[in-house]
Image (cartoon, rainbow over all chains, first blue to last red; front, side):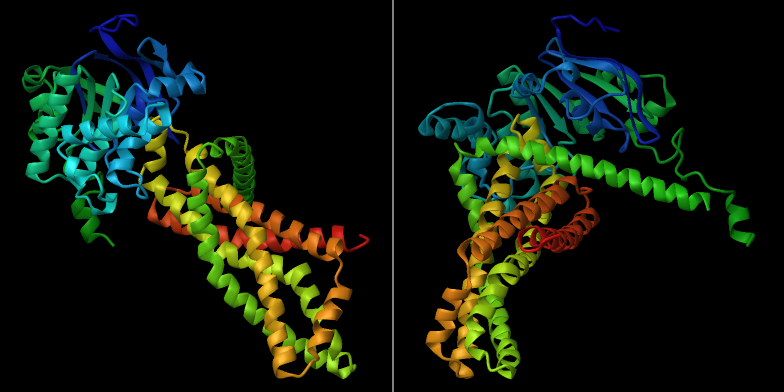
Length: 271
Length: 260
């Protein structure tokens, strides 16, 4: 396992990370690395803190222990202004899109450019149209976020996330709740953007098929631990009942169908 | 019994923690207000939705409060044959107390609750966190313009409330009950002091505007990002604003007019 901190090939390196919410340990001493220029997927059942992991990488949450190194900088020791500088180079696609509801599509994509650059209005316009064209929504520039379908909103958010040409982009459940066509479009876009722009992509997801079709490397999280990792082919042949149940989507297995409860017979007949 | 003390302790701790968070939030807002200057557009938009959209409720309420004051004042004053002083009574009540207080209460209900719900929903839909990830400080871009807009609108709305109220009192007193038009205005002119009455009233409304904007923005920003959390935060905004306005009003009145 490659865990060296200063490796030039790794853009993100997480060392011995622990994080808890209240009494619940969400991560218990996990370490992982994300190689530059690749698509890395982090998978696991709902509620295992996959989104939390992205927020830890983005410096929105602070770990109890351990460190997160992004581009050779320890995210949680940076000054606020340095953290913001670092964030300009990371894009994040939220599950809900997180578009600003009081701005139209064009202004949403233009926002990071207006805030962080001194480009002229005509230059910003060209850039925004380029980004919108890349996600196929140049014609939707005047729509408001509430007029967009879920898939379109996510594509606009993607255009916004790449507006500042980041080196890394984090996708939070990009495939959840999408119809087959939007799903196909998103899978294609993520793959294409990663290759065309030389990005590093981190996908957090529990959609096994779509994610394994584009990921170069997969980490599987459960109960605060990494329970499996490898290329999609390696994962499929991994010798772990739990991972196999997750990848195949079986209803019963190491993860039981029933939530822990009293004996069924006893529960029904003893009042 | 131990449970009771445990509960009491937890409540106390969490309210102190909240007080701390809100003070820190206020400091953040105040330092962020400078960044609104290069973006006047944001402030103008908020002045419209916070201030201009409150015009109607303030105008109508001001008119009715003024009319009631005219009516009640006339009945009491006419017992003493002093109905000529109706003008000063209506104006003093409005400018000193009712204008700032009632306008602030209405403002908390109309604009404050809307601010809380808006910010709370922005939090729930990850818009705030999305901005942070784009390296845009939501305090600077979202909160500070709204705070300034509330702070600036409140004195103007209170002044509007008082002026319309004076006209309402005139409508009833002079128009319907036959108080002399000249004495309504001249008694008002003679009886009201610019510093004691008007400036103090304006100071009150500035303080209330500050408090209501702070409370409503903080409740939204601190809301639990679920539909239930946002609804509770909105209720808290209205309740806490009302308490704060009335409490502050007593303190300010005592400082300004009393010898306490």
